[in-house]
Length: 470
Ligand SMILES: Cc1cc2nc3c(=O)[nH]c(=O)nc-3n(C[C@H](O)[C@H](O)[C@H](O)COP(=O)(O)OP(=O)(O)OC[C@H]3O[C@@H](n4cnc5c(N)ncnc54)[C@H](O)[C@@H]3O)c2cc1C
Image (cartoon, rainbow, N blue to C red):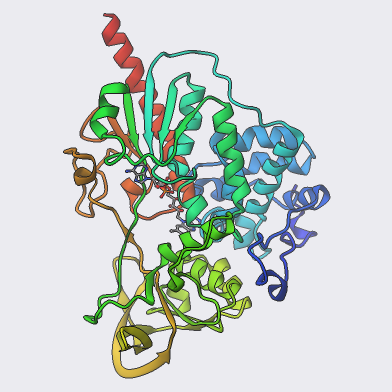
């Protein structure tokens, strides 16, 4: 260990931008075993591991780095999977530059962080290859049933732990595929769909029952679930898109980011393309509005669909963007043109179609509640021609009580109100986790919530059994 003095930080090789924009394959290649040993040995094994502290899952990173450096990958996998249900997903999609790697002491000392995410991916992919990941066989049978609504990372992580604790677990998913935003939001070039499908298969083999094309509130009532299950977990995510509010008539070629990404992901998975041609960027001048990870996914998807020009318009500057710096860099390498400090003000329409977008140049003002400097409009206006505008302005929760005909306590933002130590709602039998309690967040937080809510559900169901017996 402590080799950071001698050995340079080297990430896994990345497909060059000219090549990678030709398809939707993942852009980062995997480490060889020798490379992983080399890179893991750079860890300084700090007394206070800031990487671990800044990981939402509190992953024991220094220990598994040490095992990799000693070429003891099976033990590394044991440690890494003891806190994380899906380490191969986090290794690929976590914004490590803001979490573990951004807080690595070696990074702070100016030597370049340990490449934690890529090493995490290496350990888990090796575990799959070598057959170390076996279907879960629980040592107990609880004879109690849990219904999980939604199959994103929060629901799937909870299912993983609950099946291990011995409960009968059924997942209800309104889509035709399992995985939530991991399957229909995050593009293949960041997270290959086979990674998600493999976990779905593994959970099925472990005994989890999945009901796809089954929307709670439509195909089955919440009330039915309450009658037939001992506990219910709501992990339905947040999907109501915030839209541009420019007081102009709605036009068909200004589309919500998620509609656009879902279509691209569906086509990638082999589905027939939709008849809505506004969901394809081919040969179009595309403007994506927003500065988060969803915006980066849209611009990079548009490049791969062979848009003639892709511009990202963001109201703050690069330093104040909410998205991962790594993703912005990837987008820049792939030819995306960024217009910083640009605030949309008008859509010019011709025959009910947006033909151009007018935006105001902004200056940076005071720091706002997000901790970033807010944009202040100037009177300077500029115009960009466009064939397709993609709105990536964030998401809000749908009205869950209306949908489920329930009376759960909600927060002022419309998310489900829970005690974050328990993830229990105002109805003691009902629990909630992931984006539906946090608002739009990260995969790693959803996995964290799934892990923690499974513990509380276990506690709740054990108490229920004891009460019944006494
Ligand atoms: C485009 C995009 C890119 C992203 N990229 C990243 C990234 O790179 N890294 C990262 O960490 N995070 C990323 N995120 C955020 C991350 O995907 C989410 O925070 C995470 O998926 C939330 O998990 P969840 O389980 O709470 O909800 P979701 O993943 O949204 O899953 C909820 C599931 O519930 C289902 N559902 C909803 N209502 C019902 C109902 N009534 N009945 C049955 N099923 C229902 C939905 O169909 C869905 O499958 C991204 C998000 C988006 C939109």
